[in-house]
Image (tube, rainbow, N blue to C red; front, side, top):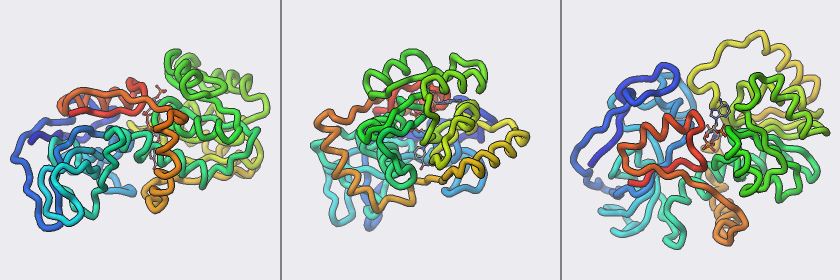
Length: 334
Ligand code: NDP
């Protein structure tokens, strides 16, 4: 089997030398385990955090250890009730061609659905969007929502669900092509290219033009320049689910000078700022799947995937995704 391990901890943005391709024997299932031959691997922004040796809501990857991640694939050996050879399953396989999984931590997949959907639109990112909107946003028809990384699996789902709930949706995305996708495929009312504005002030002016009534919900995916642009446009009683801050994942410049005005905005505008970690909400996953899977199958909810070929391509695809090189959910097909 092959796996991609963490060769060294990145300083700032990861580079290919931070990863190593290693080979070893295919694992055997212990009692209560299954072994999966991975067909699709998910690459997600949170993995950047796992490469650092810092305390977080989940443990870091150790040096020499396989990079963490969710995969899907066929069961090739089972020593657990409920799974048979040939079943399609998903779990935390890591960046690897094969993985032994505890059956209690694996999930059997519906073979009527394309396997990769379990990693994106019907997996953790889509579920994050659905959960966050319901639990932290209190969306009302006529309100204005702004979200960056808008064509990614979280952003595209937030945008489509919000639009269906009658909100005015404004996408922020990197480049003209992604802005066109945001409007044409995902139905955003407006789309702004964050790369086209040299600073937060310029982006704010453009946002103010397309959000003349202010912003009621800012879904925080990226922080940095976008956060700085949106904050002064927030309406009283606005909601900010803090889902991610990808522009700072490689390290942020200290900007303590801006903290006082940020805190003042939260106070004066009575903003509801909520940390969102999807791992707290897995009990709701069956309800999400029951509601959203039929809409994906019917085409009512659209999704985009960006598929890299072969496990060895995973590091480059991951590095590129963190810089916006992906268009849609980043998957690796093995
Ligand atoms: P995406 O597939 O959207 O990939 C990340 C995107 O971030 C890039 O394509 C790029 O889009 C954008 N980006 C990168 N750097 C910047 C920057 N400096 N400024 C603005 N945009 C930038 O990722 P996901 O949909 O999987 O995840 C979106 C966010 O949600 C991430 O922050 C992730 O960590 C977070 N998340 C949090 C979860 C939780 O439980 N809290 C669960 C799942 C995701 P573009 O080119 O359009 O700028």
